[in-house]
Amino acid sequence: MKVGEQHELLLLFKGGAAMFINLGLLMQMKYELILSIHADVVWEHSIRCFNETRLRKLIDQALDERDVASFYRYSAELVDLRKG
Image (cartoon, rainbow, N blue to C red; front, side):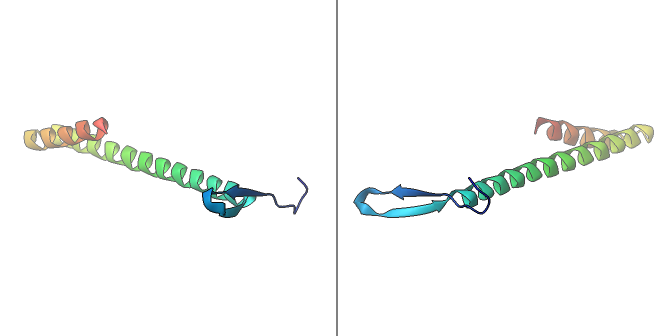
């Protein structure tokens, strides 16, 4: 394929209907979808790591202060977070 050359795919349907699909545009849409999915995965991982660090600090603080109720509450939240 030469620079600037466009390729199209002709789809034929029952009943005689037809549709042209620009393959370059289709590939661009596929690439953008993959990037979007990747961005969502990175975002979710970042939030999960932030929350895990925050809960660990709160658990340590509860232990230092001998706050049993807070310790159990934050520990349960951490377990739930790790379960997914």
